[in-house]
Length: 200
Length: 302
Image (tube, rainbow over all chains, first blue to last red; front, side, top):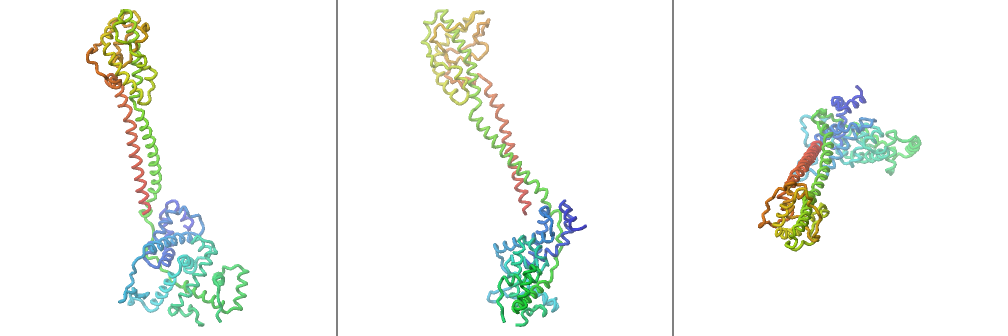
């Protein structure tokens, strides 16, 4: 059964049909939530909430890219979660040193015994990218994740964030600029072929 | 050499990288790139940044996010909640109307509506009896022995008694009739004699020869309402009704009517329960459906 037929069946309260769509999109949606929120449990909660919301509001889907529609829902769920975090700041779980300052190690919680060196580097790079993404304003973050991480084209990204194409273009350029600056601080983690400003 | 790159240039470079520039814009930018090494460096940095982001490992979903019927089980309740709310609103509106009707019904109670009619009913035979009394008195030559005539302004006309609404019809005759009662109490003996006098076949309503004598209904109401004492001329043998001559109490019309006329309590018993039952039913319906709608909505939002 193709995607359009599954959507039609799901609109007729066929939960099995919708669950087949869930299986097809859950990695994409979870990845968007993970990159937006930066934390696995919150991302899982946001993903589940997004699928429930999508099923309940399936009649609001007016055609077009279903992937973009799903990404828009999960992005909005993430916006809500980030706003909630701003209203109720939580205490960091990161360890404190003797002076009471947070120990700024991106891998303090990892078990070094189970990671080979290459996987360790990749995890470090992933953490570095995530760190830089979280430094971005939320609107810029959503745009760069949609286009550069998820691989959407501009029009799909515009559909997913509900903004004009020009806004996507502008936010993406600014986000890339800032990411470039941020990643300079982690250039030893970046593979040789991807290193920035090698000429300097 | 370091070229200062404006935000507009960054935007152009970013869009050029993704092949999102219009052909004219792309041509202009490519011309600049050929002569500006700083711009070329900026473009290369953007390309690598994008490559790094694209190389980011894609985390897989840690579990299945398929939905169960329990997760979306609020659908029937979601449809039911607005309907319950609507029923609650309708019941509330109906309750308000019934309450308003009930309040207005109590403001114009059943007794004033019924009492003037009964009083009017009673007054007519009373006046007829007085006329008969006048006629008979004259015929028998007892006019001289009667107490002074009752002033005309103390008579309660039937039209006034039939006004119905408001408390005035019940209150005003009470003061008048109390005074008249005293007068009539003195004349009770005479009235009793009158009742014994009608001759079969002779009309009793001959018209007052003595025009000053008029009677108001208070005590005779209670007596004359009874069918046996209607002083019609056609009654061949009027039944005597014993009237206590010495201890007639000073009673208002309402008191007399409440004792003598059984219809008033019946009206109260039949009229009130129906609105009360309706009010209780509507109140329970409005509250019940309203609470159910609120609970369902709260369940949906969780």
